Structure formats: C-alpha cells, structure tokens
Image (tube, rainbow, N blue to C red; front, side, top):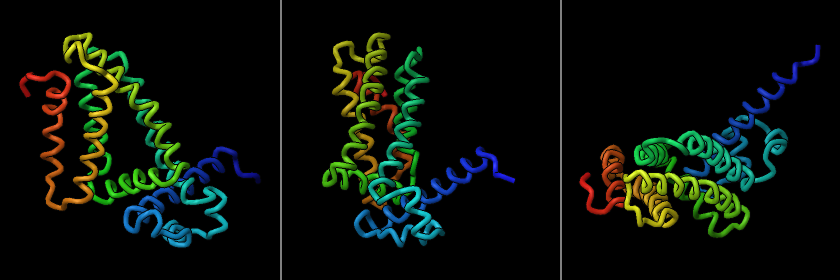
Length: 204
C-alpha cells in the first residue's frame, strides 16, 4: 500500500526539524566555520546523502533557522497590529525575543548568525528579509502607542524600533559572553526600559 501523502510530508518535516536542531546545536557550540557537515549528520543521526536531500549547505540551514523565526514573529505582529494596548504588546513581543532562548548556547547561535551575516552576503540577505518585516511592524506598534498617548507623539517610530531591536541584540551578547549575567533580572527590567525609551520622563 502506498504511504499517504500527509504521512510522507509529516516524516519529511520531522527530518527537516531534526537536522535544524542538530545544526543549531553544533553552530552554537563550535561556530559556523568550526562545524562540518559530517558533524551535523552525526548529530542528526542520518547519512550525508539523506541530509543533502533537505539542505545543500550550512548557509541553507541558517537561512531556514532565521526564516522560521521570522515567519512566527510576523504572525504575532499581525495578531497585535490593531491592539488597544500597543505598549503592552511591544513589551510582550520583546520579552518573547529575550526568552526564546534563555541559555547562553541559544544566544551564541544568534550572535554566530549575525557575525556570519557580516561576512556572507547569502546570510545577510536572509537577515535583511527578516528586518524588512519585523522593523516596520514594530514601528507600526510604536506609532499606534504614540497615537493613543502611550508614547511621545513626536517619536520617530522607525528609529525607536531600531533602538529596541538593538536592545535585543545587546541582551543576546550579554547572555552569551557574561556567565554572571542575571537573565531573569534583565527581562524583569524590560518594561521600565521600554517606557523610558518611548516616553522619556515617564515613571517605570
């Protein structure tokens, strides 16, 4: 009996997920250039021939990791676009970014991706695609917050969005490089920091 197409797709997606999880773990531990395809194959528990059916190289794996996060984030922004409490939505979204990977390995992976993007146009193109969706969506929420009196009405939404995203990148760098950094305290301080940035002089 022929295997149903839905089962085939499910098995394919499961293998793809297993490869990406293995690649992410290897990249976080050994770096992008320090990781070989054979190591990823071993971590994923499959042959090179099988793995290459899903990803032709390491760049394709990073692209898939970034795209998966971009797609999930885009859905969340879309759901919150017309919220009556945009400031709370902004804070919730940023908290999600900070807590996606609360371990240093996850943050090292993100820094590795950013670093590779600076050297590799293929990776930078994927990062740019993500930024072109996330930044305007965040700027929209900031503009909505200003319109509803939750933020400075004269604020530049795009510049504010850039600064908030820089905060996320800086948080990742701190987690990845400072073993003494208190992640929970950093996340707890986020709402007050967001309010100070968007509405200078407001009490935390």
